[in-house]
Length: 354
Ligand code: PMP
Image 1 (cartoon, helix red, strand yellow):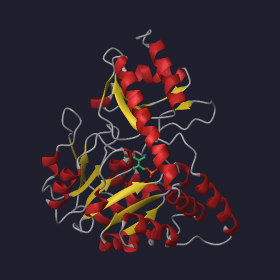
Image 2: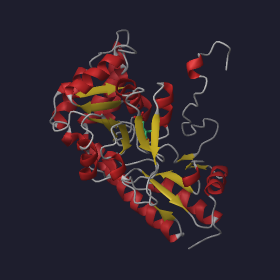
Image 3: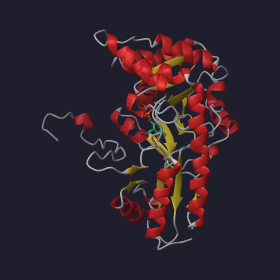
């Protein structure tokens, strides 16, 4: 830290993203990216848009917003596009949390929430997940704080039914409830259908996973017009040009190619079932994943040892050091070929289990 670094950040521990090694070719199953390229239409639109990069981008993401509004049957005023959904989440911490509106989220969830809270000087409480890693829904009902819930949750992969989400939102009418739906397309019920009913509900989604655009950085916040106006106040006070021209074009192409999206999603869901059943045959315990990753532990193999042994063999998965989950690893669902390489290596490490 330099002597110039502001006191307000001197205790900040930044988020640790998954490894992105450039030195060696890994089978990369550690950051929940899609194993499939972006839609050809996304690539075509982005390359056409490159012709106009001398101009600033459209600050209102007008074409993209109109398309999503039509797809979701909502109005453009209900949507804000952001630089990845991380930015939407940070904007939500900035807009809806402070000393009198503390944040609350599970003890095991997306590791960026406490970082955003600390960055913005927001006090927060972490509510323990149940022993089976499900969310303790009653603990959030009437909690009276700004709620952040990933649904499905990460890294557990477990989804809450929409009725439970609604119970939480409905019981906190004076607090914003943010539902982070980064993985919703892989099997959970979206809360977007509830935004008309609950002015305190904000949903965030991303193009990084199911639409193969992690590198483009495109996310969105969806909610009541007044919440979106507040987020726009924050956006226009930080970075009005937050979604660049290439990304807007790629996003539009991805939205227009629904068949490609559906086909890849179906393949990932099939591969998830395959990975889960093969891991179980090897003695792993897994959670019930509604995402594009599987959260698994082996009773006889330390989580960190497995992660390190696989890394040595050129396969990357994600290990977390948090106490309650240190025996687990989070494995992104890749192509069938990638999964077969992973499974072969796991079996060798375990000394052959089949
Ligand atoms: N929420 C959760 C639960 C995530 O796992 C991620 C991905 N790291 C994000 C939000 C943010 O994704 P992005 O910024 O790429 O949209």
